[in-house]
Image 1: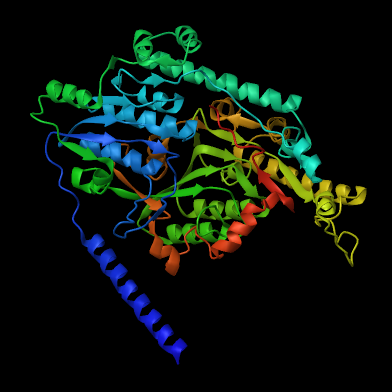
Image 2 (image 1 turned 60 degrees about the horizontal axis):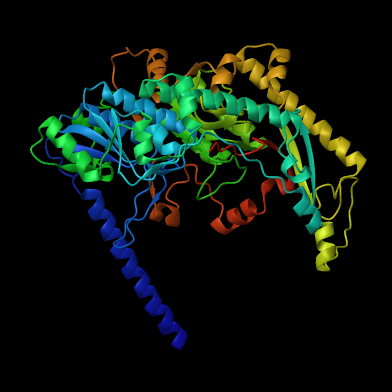
Length: 569
C-alpha cells in the first residue's frame, strides 16, 4: 500500500511538471518578437564553435538556454540588419572563438557584405587571439582597451602520437589502409609523423599562413611581407598592437559605443542583443520573402546508427531528404556539409539518398570547415560544389582499425577463452592480433572499397580514374588546393551557393529566396518525447555514448574518415 501511494504521488508530481512545462512552451511560442527602437546598435558576440546545426533549447525559468547561433543564423542576422533601417551600426565582440577557418571566412564575408549597406561596423576585442582578430579584420575599425593584449604569433600544428603509451599499457593498434596519406593509425603506431604526413601538414600550413597574411594585409592596408614581419614580433600589448597598425585605437567598451553615438548622431545609445534580433522575422524587414530553398545541415561524424545529440546517419538524412523532395514549395536545396567522414557503409547510403534528392530538386553543395573522406563522398552527387579557401576536404581513402588489448588484459590479470566456427570468426576480437590471412582478407576489402570511392569521385567530377587516383591516396586538401586540382568547383560561401542555385532553379538573380533549415531548431522536449527523428536517430543516449566513447574504429570496421582533426592555432 505504501508503494502504491508513493507511485501515485510521483505520478501527480510528474503530471503537474508536464503541465507547467507545456504552459511555459505555449506562452513562449505565443510571445511577440521584441521591439527594436530606431537608431539602434546591434551587438554581435561571435563565440564558440558556431555550429551548422541548431542545438537544443531549454525553455525553462532559471534554466533557460537558447542554442548557439548557427552559421546560417549569423548569415541571416547580418542580412536583416543591413536591410533594417532601425539598425544604424554593428559592434562585433568576438571572444572564445573556436570555429574553423571556413566558418570564419563565411562570417568575414558576411560582415564585408553588410558593410555595403553603408552602416559602420566596429569591433571591440577583449583578450583576443588569432581567431578573434581574424574575424575583427572585416570591421571598419578595431578597438581594444589600453590594458589588453593581442595574442597574435602565427600558426602551428601539433600532432600527438600515443605508441609509447600504448606499448606501456600492452595495447596494439591493428590498422590497415588504402592510400599512402591515409595515416589515421599513425598516432597509435608511430612516435612521430611520417614523411607523407609532414608533406601534407607543411602544405596546409604554408597555404593557410599565406591566406592569413593576405587577409590581414588587405584589411589593414599593408603588404603580406609587412604583416609577416609584424607577426614575427607578436604577441602584442595593446599599445604595441596600435603602433604596429593592427588595431585603430585604444578604447574601453563604453567609449566605443560613445564614438558611434557621436559619429552617427544617434542621440543616445540603444543596444540590441543578438538573441533578441534573431527573433525578428526576416520577412518583417523584407529579407527572405521569396521562394523557399532547403538548407540541409549535415554536421558531425557519419554514423551507421543514430544519435540524439550529434552525428549524421542514413535514417536521419533519408527522413529529411524525403520530406524536402516531396515538398512542392521547395524550389532547390543547399546541402551544407561539415563532416570529417566516418562509417564507410553509412556514407555510401547517405550519398545514394543525396543523389536521389538531386533528381527531384536542383541541388548544390556548400562545404563548411570539413568535408573530407566520407564527408567528401556524400558531396559526390555530380552537382556544383562550393568550398572556402580554408575548408578541409578530399581525404579520399579507406582504413580498417581494431585494438588488440591482450597485453593490457594480461597486465590486469584478465584472460579470455575464445571458441570459433569459421576461419575468420575472431578477426575483430580484441584478444587476438591479425593473422597474415586476416590481414590479406581485410586489405582486399579495403582496396575494393577504395577503388569504388575513387570511381564515384571520378564519375561525379567527370575526370579520368587515373587523374583522381593521383589526387586521392587519402590526402587532405585545403579548399584553395582542391579548387586548383578540380576536386571542387568554386571558392565561396552561402551567398555564392544561393546565387548559383537561383540560376539552376530558373529564378532570376534579383529574386529573393528564403532559406529553410533542416533539421529545424529542437527543444529539450523534442528530444525527451522524440517528436521527430530528423537527423536525431532513435538510439538511446547511453548506447550512443558507449559506442562513441569506445571509439568506433577500435571495434573493427571500414571507415572513410579524415585521419586527424586539424586545428591550426
